[in-house]
Image 1 (cartoon, one colour):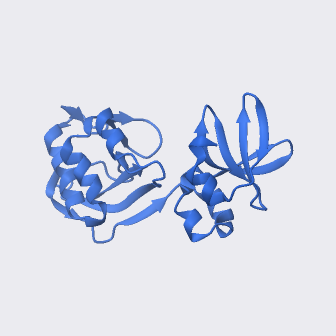
Image 2 (cartoon, helix red, strand yellow):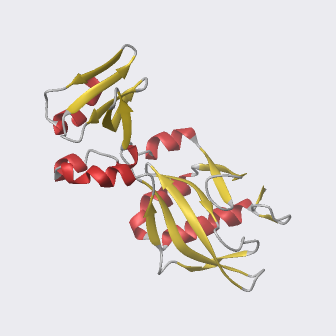
Length: 213
């Protein structure tokens, strides 16, 4: 039904879904991913020419996307998972892209799989690679344990406004956001009208009540 990357051969869509299910059945820490796939969140698989090597993006069922999305979920690559390919008589690596609690797609950084055996999988050496979190790491020490639970590291990035650096922490709609400076002063930053307003509440309270600020 869908092409497996650039190879002229086509792999049955059901085989691809079976492979994905079998992989996540062996990864109990990601049972929510298996649950969403079992419910049918993947409507289709589309080959993309960007983001990651040999990347395929999932077309997702919107209702299930809304059900499983985690607003403060992290963004990461699930790596070093291997599938046996009878075409090459060996194992090839498959990586999965997960963001905000939802499985978005997969990539193959090496050999492109053309004839996967969904029942011959190695996950013992899998690892997680978080991405888009360099700015968060540079200011992580500022936050308490309770505050860290309310912050998505992937949402943290540095912006410069009027010659001063701020760190975006959380969107509050229409391009406005909650941010802090390096002294941990908290601000509501809006673009229409443009304003940088310092907030007096604690960061924990602001993050919990940001929708009403």
